[in-house]
Image (cartoon, rainbow, N blue to C red; front, side, top):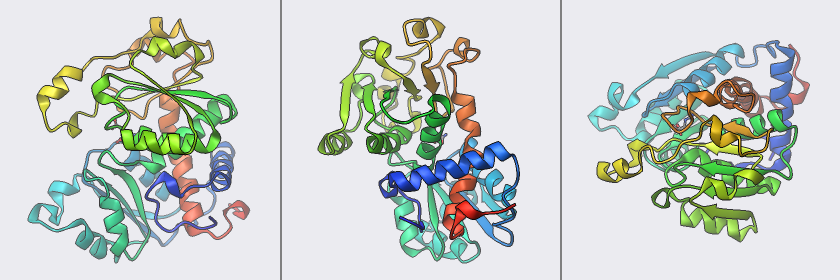
Length: 312
Ligand code: NCD
């Protein structure tokens, strides 16, 4: 895959494409230089129908760093014509005609695919319901690579709300490309979706499922923690039953490998105790900061024919 159009799912990515993206992202962050105003004269529109801090800010910071401009609608659900009943398709048609790239976050799974089917410009999925969050997994893989120096031969444990957490859905699909061993640890009610699990088994991924972190912790190289996705529960009683049901702290990590990498897409609620923050294992704030170089590199790959030969 040389050039991307829309970015909707991690299913689109190949290893070659990912490897080149990570080389470019590293170059951007190590050289600490603006890779030239490749987005100069271009406009990014960010349409967020759900709250966001990191994703929206890092997309916007990436665009501005590349010389582009941003049209931003935070809380598009209330402050756009969606409140009047406009469909995502109509909004994408209209806003797409005023910009060069559309970044969309939406509570409905598949909404960004629908928007992309009519948008005149590339659509990037910044999270669609409990579906996917493909650019977050680019950040996640890149972070593992930065922290561990490799993506091969690792045991990655995903811990928390694996049912509704779109970041783990996307990450698991990508890790399969690297033959990582994956452990899914969650309360029963928040188990990894069966259809996705079947997809992983279908590609002979090495997957283990359990409800107890202690079953897999000592073998784990990367521990990827997620919060309970409160907004996905239609029944708040059900949410109350799982809220606060898991947490890691410095004592938990004492049982783990000393070079364990702890990640979290953030925001965290109570699933990682603040005592972990000071440990060298805590990679989640570095992970959040990797959002900017990765999204800069992604914009390069979308808009520049040969991004590896860019000059500043
Ligand atoms: C995640 C999301 O929105 O899915 N956050 C993010 O983009 N970094 C995870 C979450 O909200 O729990």
